[in-house]
Image (cartoon, rainbow, N blue to C red):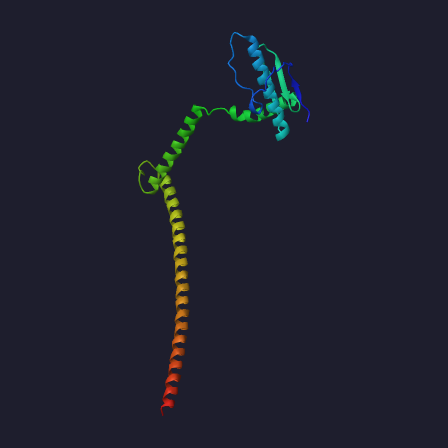
Amino acid sequence: MTSEEKARPIEEGGGGGGEGGKIPSMEINPHSSSSVHITFAKRRNLLMKKAKDLSQLCDAEVGIIIFSCTGQLYEYSSSSMDSVIQRYNNLKQEAQPELDRPTVNAEVLEEEIAKLTRQLQGLQEYHRQLMGEDLSGLSVKDIQKLESQLEMSLSTIRLQKEQIMTDQINELHRKRHLIHQENIELQEKVNLIDKENAEFVEKVSIMYV
């Protein structure tokens, strides 16, 4: 795997560098620019090393861009920095429509609520008229229309009622047939027992004659 890394070589200085390759924290004198530069160099190099290990051990595509306090650019990419940036921008653009989704206009919501409210009021009024209420403002034609609608509804209800009653009657017939069959089987068993008892009594009688 190829990699790109731009960094100014800075001497790490003597010493072990801490347990497990970690660089121990040090108190930085804010008035000492050399201390800041040395700490920055150590932390930068450690970050670059960790990024390289991550890309190699986990087969991950990694890109790091660092600007120092002096404006110096340092970067590392496991493949190509342009490729990493392009991939990042593509993913960001794919997620952007969700972020840019326009908010629903309050006026549109109010119009939709008003429309649904009118429809609900119309349905409630129609229901009352079907129940024989609020008929004073209707014309003869409107009442005839309601009457036709009621007759159609009653016809549908009657058909449904007849179907339910037919199904229930058929179920009762089926149960009665099952009970009749069970009675026949029970009677046959009783007759068989009676026959066996009679034969047994006859054998006993012969034995004591």
